Image 1 (cartoon, rainbow, N blue to C red):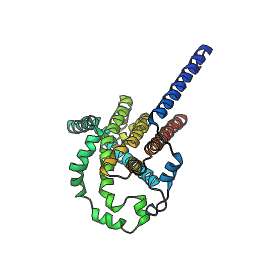
Image 2: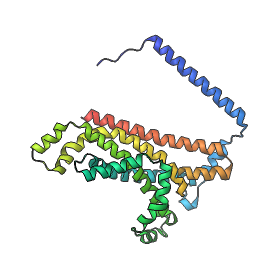
Image 3: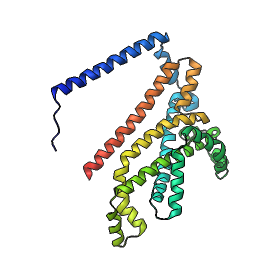
Image 4: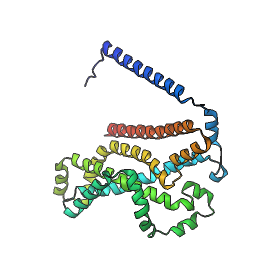
Length: 291
């Protein structure tokens, strides 16, 4: 398929539009700076966020908060992917009980604001779940082990971290379920019928016939969900999880470097999200080239 050539007029219009956007941005920044009358101090802000702390094994508090954000994202993504995939399969089930329960979960989670759900989960559901977990044993395992606390969580914040991961996983799992359901619907029905004609069991049909084809469809969309998880980690700062937004708020309040700290925080979130988008785009292109 031949690519269409762009006319010189269209190129000039594109450059003119970009120049106009750049001019608007310059005017906006100039007016903002002149209106705020703010004394910018990027050097002090960088020194403030990069000062090593013995409590965090030589890392700065800000760096430790970034690490906590990454930990919450990874664990949330794992649980959301596993739970969402299971619910997505249930959504395609012909058994009314499975399809009704999974649909109720998806519609409930997708139509409740994340902030409201996290508060409900933290205050009403988390205490019931924590009763089933050996928290004292986990805290005892973490006590006195600084490296383990650094890599996992401090004992005093164990409940908060678990609540954050589980609530985000339940919330994002609903979106994963819909992506998985859409992936199954994209597979031609003849594929499943052919697997049944060959005598494959239900699990073998899923494992060897349907899942590989569904995976090719859902991988790009799962990247968008992972980006959403990264951004939604900011909400768990409200339940005292020491992630990036929580640390930024504390540092901005204690240093009075409000704009510097929050702009640096926004830049870090942007870098994380763009890195995820690029990684999934590269993964998708690699899978297409190998197909």
